[in-house]
View 1: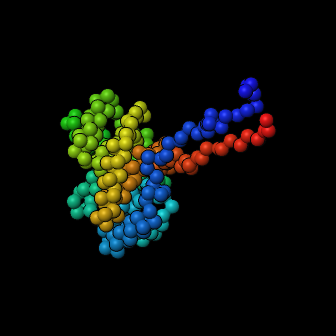
View 2: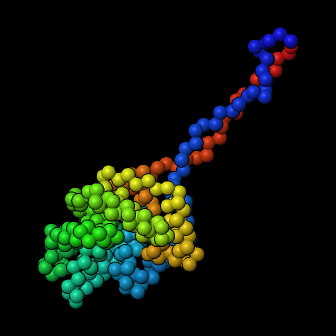
View 3: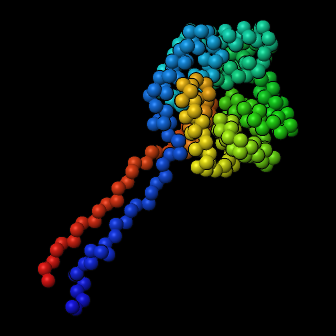
Length: 283
């Protein structure tokens, strides 16, 4: 039979599938369910009713990172009692670190709050913003010198939240130290610690280049599921979920207006277009 260019061999037809786009490694909007959110808020309400205001502030701050639109019950009375608790604790114990931890939670919850005035009031005028940041600076240097990288990460995040312009020295020694800590967490299955430290590195290091592989996401997600199975939607669950959201984010900025987290757009499944069936020709 002579060759006819109009003849089409249907066995040679192919359908080109568009390039697959990566899904979010962690999608808090879908993976943190309505049940999870409701249970976190229930735990928050229990802390409020029991007057455990430091724990209330910690959990509320983590929940806000996960879902800024949730109603956390932060009325005027709650703010007043959190501030009073901070002041009373300082008067009783002279606990400067208590102020640092509590004021950090409050800054996440309400970035425009007048930190300087609150520190002065809570400490009876004994401390001011500069002295608080000086304590953090000294602690960071000491943790770095002693290779206490878990402590360093926690202190660095607090410092960055309180003062986004605070100069945290992140040199190759710090990067290497934190990476070794992360590797140790990975090998020992300490995935909650891994998430905290990886998140800290992302927040403080402009040259952040840590790649989160499938093993890391599987480990962190497995830890999150353990909390769910244990019925824990309290601080451990919220803290890990918040860290995972930051690690999955396309962009994270710590500014005077608060923590700005930009997530990548979720990709809908893309179905390949089916080419039109060629018109049958009579031969």
